[in-house]
Amino acid sequence: MRSAFIEELIIAAESNENIVLIVADLGYGVIEPFAKRFPDRFFNAGVAEQNMMSLAAGLASEGFHVFVYSIANFPTFRCAEQIRNDVDYHNLPVTVVAVGGGLAYGSLGYSHHAVQDYALIRAMPNMLIGAPGDPMEVRACMRYLIKNPQPSYLRLGKAGEPCIHKSVPDIFPGKWLCVGDVKDFSSTFLTTGATLELVNNLLTKKSKFDHYSHYSMPLWGMKSKDSQPEHIKSFSQVITVEDHLMDGGFGSWLLEAVSVKSELLARIKIKALDSKVCGMVGKQSTLNAEGGLTEGFLCE
Image (cartoon, rainbow, N blue to C red):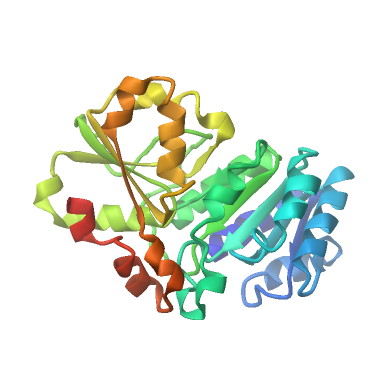
């Protein structure tokens, strides 16, 4: 995912002189191609994320579309006030790029878990969330965000994610993106972010779910709630799956979106991480399993 991000950023920067990248003294092995190609539009803010975010807001106020890049917990919780007051309040074109969403950096402990980031970011009224599940969705999110500069949050995996989609899809906020062939089933999984791969693997192997379709939503947020009740009407059951705590997460967002049609609420079933992972240290796959993101849990 990181490689797809930087490749799309370079392509955009070649034709758009207002594209800027700021990092917090990390990203090495990924960001160098951009830094070498556009040295005047690359800044290393050092280990000072709050300053980095305010710098980004200042540049954005002068007409730049700024991408700030760091490990998931650092450009979110560490500088939440700067996102709230400097970026979101002024509706500035800053894209917060968080690498290692969910439990990707689980071996570094709770300080590096990004399992409450959706809750934080979606409380900001102008922020759009991009949570791609494979490199093709990363490219799709980048192309949308570059064409539509705005306060946004792009949550990436760490590295090595397989391509689930055969080509770059056309997306917009709130769009249900069909994974695989279109199937007219009454039950469906709806994923965002890294759980795209988990559910895709499940449906590939488990005949029990032959009657389930699978959709992904890589772009969502406050402004894309209105269309959700119409989507839900098409299904008798929608199972959301996310590598985030249930509180304030993607499934909770969908429940809020359909609360205007209370008869639809019972159709939504949320599968999310158990909060016990907050006190655990381990690799991503182990912590996901401990938190409930397993085939067995999804089958319940």
